[in-house]
Amino acid sequence: MPLTVEQVEGRVRVTVLEVHGDLDYSNYLDVISRAREAYDAGARHLLIDLTDVPFMGSSGLVALHSIALLMMGQEAPDPEAGWDSFHALGRSLTSGVQAPVKLLGLQPKVEQMLERTGLKRFFEIHVDRDQAIGSF
Amino acid sequence: MTQPLRGSSAAGAARLLRVSTEPASLARIRRFVEHEAIELGAGQDAAADVVQAVDESVTNIIVHGYRGAHGVVEVEIRAVDGALVVHLRDHAPTFDPTRVPRPDLSRPLERRPLGGMGVHLARELTDEVIHRIPPGWGNELTIIKRI
Image 1 (cartoon, helix red, strand yellow):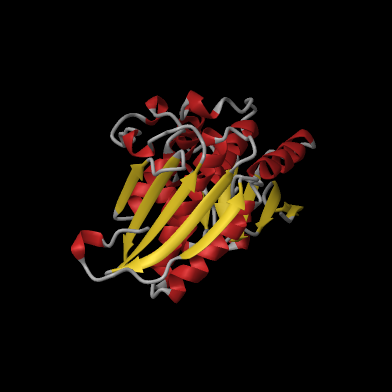
Image 2 (cartoon, rainbow over the protein chains, first blue to last red):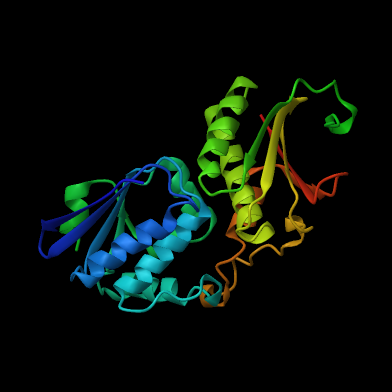
């Protein structure tokens, strides 16, 4: 699946990871790997652009979970280990601490899936790229 | 042979796809289900819901059923009395996903496992999910969505 990474200067340097195409079990590990590469290269504010993702399976949730964790400087746990990483991410939303990972451009069915699985409230979700970058 | 729902009128012709269980087959299955669902009269929303439910279920077959080993999945879809009926058949060890407990959304999130979201989504997006063991197969999962 095509993935592009771009550095954008807002108030802080933001790494924009654009995902293109369906996100499912066949490619979710590629997304995690790309995010990990960005983190290892120094990225600390990540905007995941899902504008061009018409379908996301629950493997995509695992990708978002893992990326949220690694961007908080933690190793991605066994997916069976629990939602601690999401809870920590959610705490940052309510405490005023900027979350290191935000989402952009959720298509309706993708947003619906995040809602139905209780994941939506752990991410700041944007519809405008410039506003998303400026929010970090 | 697909049984009509609740003694209603006879089912239409079934559309069938049989693929190997490599992860790349998921996209092919999604395209097949979406196309056939629309052809059978489903609206875009209903078709998308069925596509998601099927993808989640086939992913579980690949990951948990065959555990990454080579296998076959058969996808049969038809319209029966105002509903889409999708049968997913495999030769994996018998597993009934309808027995997976529903996630308790009222529990603190740190006490919820991440697993089980696929089954949860399939239930949420469709009207009925039925498991049985037909002759010659390890599992058959039937997904029903009113259209």
